[in-house]
Image 1: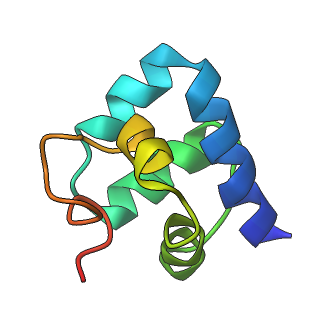
Image 2: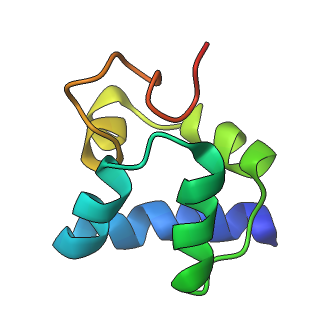
Length: 77
């Protein structure tokens, strides 16, 4: 269930410009999860990582700062 919350958050981010901007400036996965929890989305950093790995580069750029390297912002590889 919580994994689905991460996926639902990513869908909500596409529609919410203020949330997009807030998440884009977040470099720390725990801070990202805390912001999500404030919006009612409960999931762990691990579940966030799993969901990020499923995103296309375009969708990822919608959620994280596109000026940073791909997936480096939240999910360093």
